[in-house]
Length: 108
Image (cartoon, rainbow, N blue to C red; front, side, top):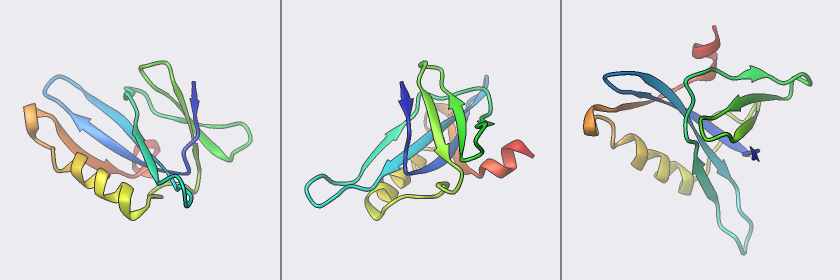
């Protein structure tokens, strides 16, 4: 399955035995359907730039593949920002630490 979010944030999960990255994706809803979000299953690998140069391709452990628009990083609404905050506040539980990271810091 290919997932194409409008906005996205990268979360780094650091556990005692490994480090992996998950994508927090968001979509702006319309009048009748609200904003939505999704947290990817995670990946130990980093994304690659698509051949067209318009999005990052990031396969996940579940088999899904995220196509992240290059200028969609940190794109979220006030609703999805609250959800993202609730995820990050869980950092440290079960010895898993969660932090936001910028894609640029991972690929350079």
